[in-house]
Amino acid sequence: QVQLEESGGDSVQTGGSLRLSCVGSGFTTTNNCMGWFRQTPGNDREVVAAIATGRGRTYYSGSGSMKGRFTITQDNTKTTVYLQMANLKPEDTAMYYCAARASASICDDRFMRGRDNLWGQGTQVTVSS
Image 1 (spheres, rainbow, N blue to C red):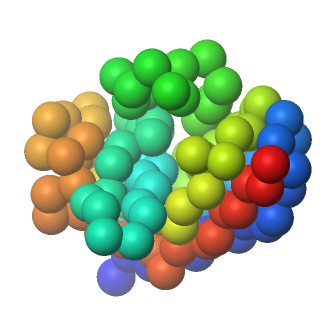
Image 2 (image 1 turned 30 degrees about the horizontal axis):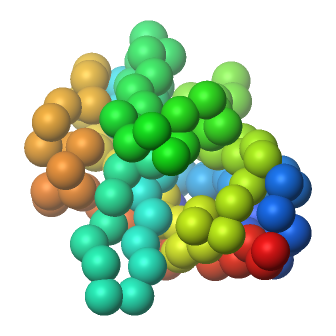
């Protein structure tokens, strides 16, 4: 059974940086899709970034508000992914969730839409002005 555990959320000021971590366990292969979504109260979860761990192909949200500021990476085990966030803004305040799709060679549209994903419990990021 795949489990995901996030960490790294914190309260920072505008312009600050954070690195979120997601440790995955229970995978039977290193070819998985893992990624980050975020959610604010009353809104749907939106994709931030994803990575197909087998080849390391990365995917990013098309939202201009995040472009160029967030970077997803993975470690050598291909079961831990990181989200490096720079130049944080108050609108980045949200609960950030790690997501995964086991045995996936790509992060398909369904994953990017948050359909049928495995989820962690979330880690809160708060950016104050």
